[in-house]
Image (tube, rainbow, N blue to C red; front, side):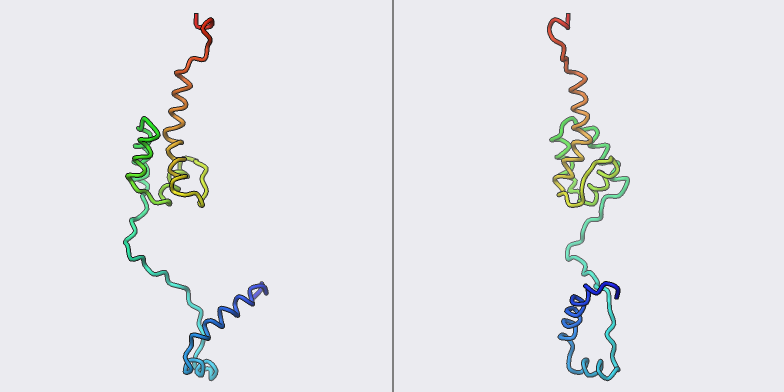
Length: 139
């Protein structure tokens, strides 16, 4: 092992493994009849069946629905009703070039997605319709 700073941690792990062995297993190790073999941990399946992440066609449909929204609240309602997983929201954000971090919560990512699809259009429309000229300039 190249990194000697890992030795104490490795020894603690080894000690915890040895503590769990029976007397017969310890005798087998000492006599050379048994070996310690490292194994990868196997993740247990969750009791609930997790819904799969949204696929590409579904993401496109979500994006179209959000683009058609007339208000931010409507967009938030759509996203909350779909109950998208964080991974799906990250895919949508990545596809649109939205700057989010993996540590962001689902609510933060949802707000960023809504702002990208709806908020930017609403702001643009407001700038197009607002008349900033003074009364004298309008004549």
